[in-house]
Each structure stands twice: as structure tokens, then as C-alpha cells.
Amino acid sequence: MTTVRFAAAAAIVLLSACAGSGREEQSADTTVAAAVAAGPSAEVTRAAEISNAITNNPTKTDSILAAHSVTPEQLTEMMFRIARDSTASADYGKLTAR
Image 1 (tube, rainbow, N blue to C red):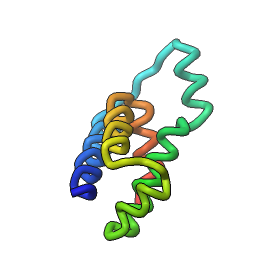
Image 2 (tube, rainbow, N blue to C red; image 1 turned 180 degrees about the horizontal axis):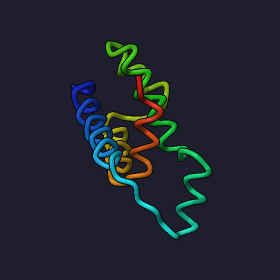
Image 3 (cartoon, helix red, strand yellow; image 1 turned 30 degrees about the horizontal axis):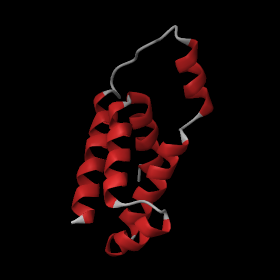
Image 4 (tube, rainbow, N blue to C red; image 1 turned 180 degrees about the vertical axis):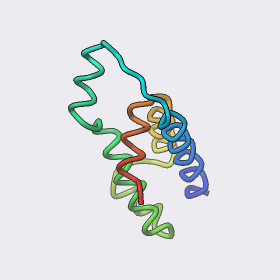
């Protein structure tokens, strides 16, 4: 069950990242430019690390979550937060690309 929920949340994030990949948008907002230059957020990096570990060892999902001190519900919430942010989604997609 945990793997199914995680896979669904991950799919939403990846679809969000792919949906914006064909569009080139420029922004004059220097805050956004600074955030992009800084790289992925700690949350995106953490989510990608967990995702990659689960992808590589799906039968160990529960122990991977425990090792990262995150519940399935917390991971799902994290994935939805990332999915709502186009920059975070794109960063997540890059960090989990195979």
C-alpha cells in the first residue's frame, strides 16, 4: 500500500514537471532567478533521495521511510507540495531521471 501511494504521488510530480518542459517562460522576478541559481531545495533533494532508494529497492519501502524518519503520509504530503511548484517539480524530475 505504501508503495502504491508513493508511486501515485511521484507520478503526479513527474507529470507536473513534464507538462511545463515544453514551455519557455522568462520572469523578471529576481527572487525566482536566485532560487533557480541556488539549485534544488532541501525538501526536493530529500524527496528525490527517498524516491531513488524506493525505486531501487521497492520491497524495502517501509525501512527506507523509517531510515529517513518519514511516514508514508508525510512523504505523500511532500510529493504534493513539490507537485504544486513548477520549479520544484522540474528539479525533482532532474534528480530522479533514470
